[in-house]
Length: 63
Image 1 (spheres, rainbow, N blue to C red):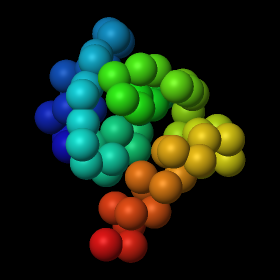
Image 2 (cartoon, rainbow, N blue to C red):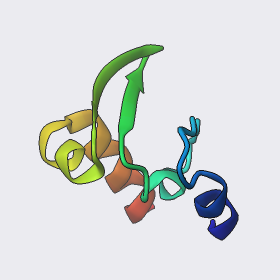
Image 3 (tube, helix red, strand yellow):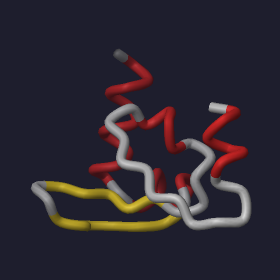
């Protein structure tokens, strides 16, 4: 995780992740469903606004 943080300093980095813990520090997250972008924003915004993102996060935290 430290390597990812250092590598993306002062540049744009695209990270494709199945484990949401990988993107917890991302400035902006794009939520995909069935290959389509359905929402984007910071994690706190997505947890409040996106049922899909909240469901994915809960599934990974709970189990």
